[in-house]
Image 1 (cartoon, rainbow, N blue to C red):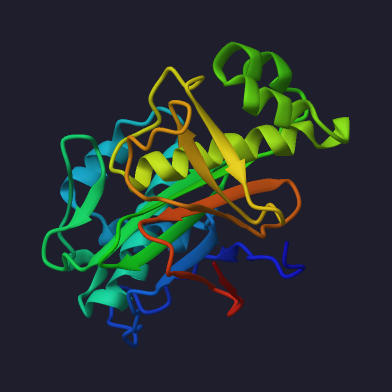
Image 2 (cartoon, rainbow, N blue to C red):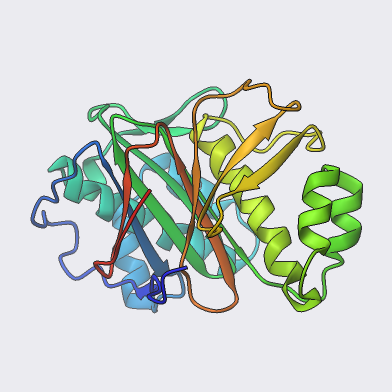
Length: 257
């Protein structure tokens, strides 16, 4: 794994919905952005102006104030990031979802994207002319990952999780989990059970992998997954169609597959 890590940046809505310089992306790139979702009241006020009516209604239905604020921040920063690829103001973007819940832009079909958030952090993946999925999880040592693996995952995944240093079992479990989430989201659906028919096959350096389905049968799209070099305590992965793409991080680091 590259020693450089993708930093979660503080959100600042400094232009208040004005257009920022356009970011060019080619089909051989997947851009990944990371943000902290805890924002102050001023920033949250700006964020509210970016959201669609539906997004505002969804936020208002959340009982937890912290969850409501983080939902608003995540949706607003997603709109701000997308606006830099579409040459539209954040509040003008038309975002819809498929019947399976995958979001897409109605007016900029070439720009594909996916969002994930966990415990006050969010990752955004942007691609051009290829479907993309991303997932993020926080390490939680109190969780019985061996028990969860035996209950839900394949024998191959169980063996991977229990192998090697016991202190890294939680990380290995989350690698298996975020890889599945990223692949399924790239394919346009959420994670589906049962999971024990599939298993994660890793490259020798463990920087990328592939979901092997039904004892080698390929029932899904051609979606490799690549793990992200995040801050300690976090595990993330991005998946996209094809193999000829590089991951470009917000802090400028590049990783080629």
